[in-house]
Amino acid sequence: MSEASSGLNAIAALERNADLMTGRVGLIGLPVPHLPAGLETADAPTLVVTEHAGLADALAGSDRCRVSFGYDLPDELAQPLDTLVLFVPKARQTLDMQLAMARALLVDGGRLVLVGEKREGIAGAARQLQALAPDAHKVDSARHCQVWVASVTGVAGTFDPLAWLQWHELEAADTRLVVANMPGIFSDGHLDEGTARLLENLAEMPVAGPVLDFACGSGVIGAWLQARHPGLGPVDAVDVQAQAVICARQTYQRNGARGEIIASDGLPADLGRYRTIVTNPPFHSGVRTDTSMTERFLRDARRHLLPGGEMRLVANRFLPYQPLLEQCVGPCQTLFEDRRFAVYQARVSS
Image (cartoon, rainbow, N blue to C red; front, side):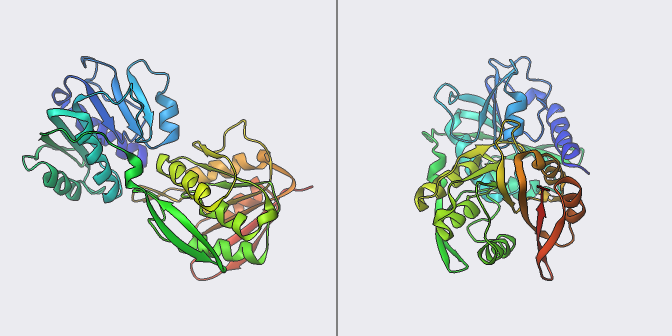
């Protein structure tokens, strides 16, 4: 089942219970750029809070909703809600943060609705909801999804996403950084093994600037490159996730790194050209393997590389990236390989 199918299942389960969405309504974690039916009678345009830049862009022009990319709501959007729907995220800590946001947004006695697929962890998410609201109960089960409802009492005050920011130290190839982390970030407070292999390779075989880090996460690669090679210059970075954009900016600031951190679903068409693009690209969507984002990125990357420029990519060995690199960028060689990971270098012909 694709991510889109999974998201539409959750939407359909919610639409079966459209009578729950009354008054001023908000949606957190909407999985697809498709507003559920049943919101037409809401008292105001629906608030949509999403951490996905592409989804935010897709809904930005709709007159049916007000969109916030990320959890730092401007004052005009942070208005009290009567009903708030949470779509189950893949990380438990992300749900904790979203539940805290829900408490801050809902009026006293407001309705909190939780919806998600069984395979995406709705059972565990429901237990988290019950810890906040003991009256939480399941009202429907359909399309492999469950719908839970609770009332939230008391006023929790304001919500500040930076209060969920944490810091950790890491070291790679004798170069140390202090790195920001938030719920939902891929690395989850540590240096993942793939990025470690890439940084070790970059220490042995330095790259030339200007540099772009695609799918930058918390900004480790860009900050590390500048700490390791002070003369390299700024490293721009792109990520689709709101928490990653926040953390990358915080990591750059803390480590004195320079570069523009860009929120985008893929490479923006107006992005400049670089001598090097480095990446540890994602290959999961929820609990499923999904390389579509990386495949689209590779097809777009060539026009953002200067003649003679290179792509340096680390990936799990089982992923079919080498033929795509050959096809989309240019001649490709394997610079490093072990039982789990490979580091590839593809060059654009001069």
